[in-house]
Length: 436
Image (cartoon, rainbow, N blue to C red; front, side):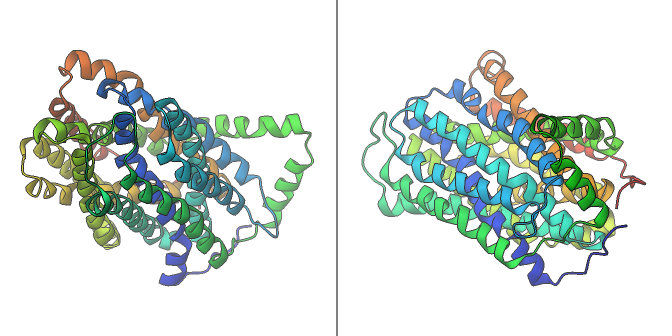
């Protein structure tokens, strides 16, 4: 017997999602500041993809495992999902504080691994937490509220980068050193990572498990350590075997979508060194302005997408948004004015809002409540697997097929988005009879 979930107010849904501000501030720094730090510390452009291998590896391992473990967890005091994203946020906070102090490239790369573990540990159970709390009729607004905080968090991260450079920058770049103006963005992120999570934890109680779920959790607790260790892996294997066809189709869309996104984030700074003749600091600041622009748009349009998806269907809005993102990526390399190049980010921001909300809402509606954690982990595996493929394959593609030219890299990413949009139109959303 399932617990009937109460309808929540706008502000209850708002408070529940505040923690995404800190998580996404951290991800915003990963998108815009960490690759420039690698360049400051002596990395070459062609090895940037492989230096980012931490993201796919940790995401592939951590997210589904934490999702499966949290499905089998309950504490009357701490809840089901909260312990995991609290620990993840604390780990991320410590890493963000240390990151700009990196004395060498190897140290920064190692910190990225730990930071990604923390962010992934926080992210997956948080997405399941929102699905746990909301009745089906409010899932769209719940996940689009997430999208709003995704935009706001990354917006603040990137705005801080170019503002602090303007206020505290200047002087020549020193090889092997991270400029001091970049420190402040990471220190703010260190505070937000834990503070915003605590806000949501203290403001939002979790729904207790049903008697049947509690009985299953207690059976799990009674197992030996070795048996409990095996359970998450078995759960993941069974969930993949039983996965709705919709999720298999979505995984192909995600392959092209996320492959393209990681090209953009890795090569937008090198692109501006090529097209505008900027040094690394100037290029990083311009990339931060691009990200700030599209995340302003994301924060504005995230909730507007809710009535549009209800009227026209999630997959149509999703596909149209992906196609708009492709237009943005095709346009960026051909614009050399640092102001005019911000205009394509309107389309990119609409696409980012759709990507961060619509797929999670569609999936949450078709998966069983008792497996929501593991399925949200699997959905995020569909992000990190393309990341892994990109980090392993795009370096050689960039060097040997694209002439080591960042303009060609951006056009390649735009083509991937066209393919993703075409595939998104073919999605068939069918409710799983075993779902909510």
